[in-house]
Length: 263
Image 1: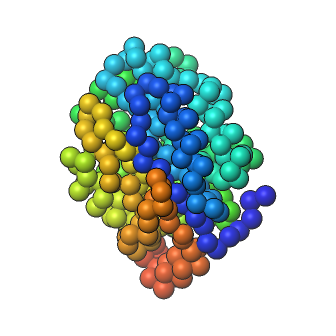
Image 2 (image 1 turned 90 degrees about the vertical axis):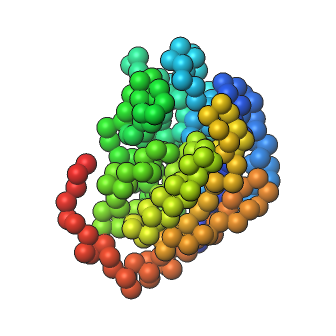
């Protein structure tokens, strides 16, 4: 039952992703969830958590799955077992195309998908994958409205715009290296401030051929203030919907926003 709760607990896992090793990565998530803080409502995993990324079409194509494949089967069971929503992204294949596909899976199995819109043209991602065309539907979960972008999308504020306070939480699964960590942190803060919403910047951990990642996973409240704390392998935040609603009501910047869409 999707009932309202004032306080919601969000945990982000900076998983050290093993390239191409789906079972190893899924097993690592399952093990980490053995120490998941009690009462966690939403778990956020990194971008492409089960495979990682490579500038190689053939390798990525071989790893890609349908939405009913083993990765999403694992995620649905994880959500059911821990009575929480699980979000992240995986490498999806559909109609001969590859997508960096975000997911938000509820404990009852209800699932929303989002295909990454802005593909990182500095790498081969824009050549290998197909860009999404639609924003993620806003999901109502335990009384909170949740939306999602993926990694590089964070740089594009128009795409992220929270029109008329339509969402309360913005999830950002990412593979964002420390070399651009200053930008990642400050872009996440900017999205939180301008949209008066919580932003979960859920970066991966470890390292790969593209860089190192540790230490960038953070959670910010609607004022752009740090809200997350380390709890075992997780970064965890307890957020109050009433406090966020009161802040929005007391400083109603959304009422003065441009009343049009570019999307």
